Image 1: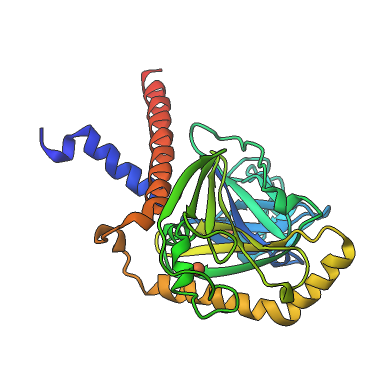
Image 2: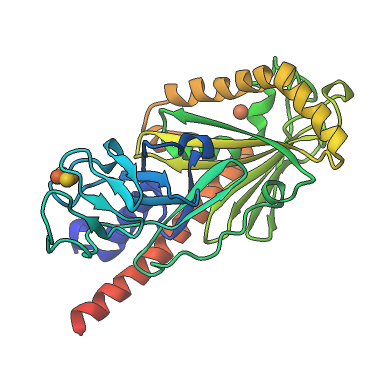
Length: 355
Ligand code: FES
Ligand SMILES: [Fe+2]
């Protein structure tokens, strides 16, 4: 059988493509809350899809395809309207369900009331907006159970958001690789400590895995937990901070990486501390804003600059060693999820074909 008609080879390529484009049936962080406000909508691209977001009169964020069904103008160039979003070109108003709410230029236009474009489910929490990108096998959004650090008031947090000119899976690989902390960030405020040599250990945790240094704990960036729970992908890691960095113990990072397209991504890092009392929270917030934020940005910029400088096909020509077991596990996990999605979609398509 030649390669191009071998279904196994074909499935392998489709799995790679699905992982590279971003899993479907998944919630993604798409914007900071402050980016969606006022009379102008906010346009964003994720997984190669253009979306338009705005707030309705109740302040609830709405999300539709960034495409006017009349002639294709981007809805994100329009204006927020009492019934939805008004297109800048001829004023057609689309509501939050992707239904034509009004065609102001023509009385009793038959397009009114027609569902014409896609709409997306939205969830807002901890200064960020999440959008569900459906899959054929799961068109309706499952509930999004965010990490406790984002939902519990006893955690103080700041959201740091950036666009990186690299594939989202480079950003995820980077997070599944604690050892780079001792090298790439070796000169930074908190990551200069500890040994520069170790072996790594991998263990299973609920909905994911943990990668950690075998001989060092609570010294540097010593572990990452990667969560791939079937509805979202995120990581959790700790950076121990000296007492001079204020109350709340280790500096915890909750990270989400969202593909924009196959070459770019958005990263959302919540920098959290378990401050508990309001006084401790206020004092940490002050310290963070005045001193720590600039240092943290410096570290994140080191990641960005390095990842953006890597060639796009670096994972085709790499020599992994023991430390990379977290990266390997992450790739296997994403590939398995992609495979399950594709098989479920194929079954639905086959059923449709047989019907
Ligand atoms: S293209 Fe949007 S109203 Fe005409
Ligand atoms: Fe880093």
